[in-house]
Image 1 (cartoon, helix red, strand yellow):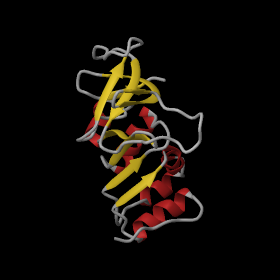
Image 2: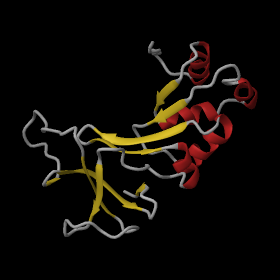
Image 3: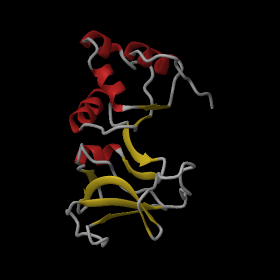
Image 4: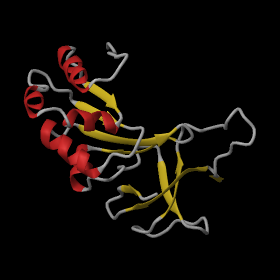
Length: 176
C-alpha cells in the first residue's frame, strides 16, 4: 500500500493530494483539520467530491469537541481520535459513533489495553470521578535512555501524566 507524504502542509493541497491519490486513511493533528474547515465555502464544497478517505485519524493534541462535530458534519462519520504516548502506546480510540455521542471524548481502551483512573490513594475511582490516567498493555515501555527522566509506575500500570474520568459507557474524558 503506498504512503503519500507532503513536505509542507497546506489545507488545499492536503485535500487535493488525498483525493487525487485515492487515499483511504489520513493521519493528521487536529489543527490540520481546523485549517481545512477555515477554507472558503466554495473550496469545501468541492473537497473530496470524487473520492473521500474511509478514515481520518487524529492524534498529537486534544481534539476539540466542536471541531470533531463540524468535521464529521461536513465530511461524514470518518473521524477517529487516537490518544496515547511514547510511554504507554495506545490508551484509547474514539470511533465516529463515540465522537457523535460525546464529541470531546478520547474514546475507549482498545483490545489488550487496561485503562484505569486512580485516585490519590492509588486505587481505582468510581465511574465519573476524576483521577490520574494509568494504562497497561502488551507494548511495555522499558524507560528512557537518560537518567533522571521517569514515568510513574504502579505495578504493571504506567501513568500518562494526564487527568481524566471514565463515563458509564466506558469513554475516557481527559480533563487535565
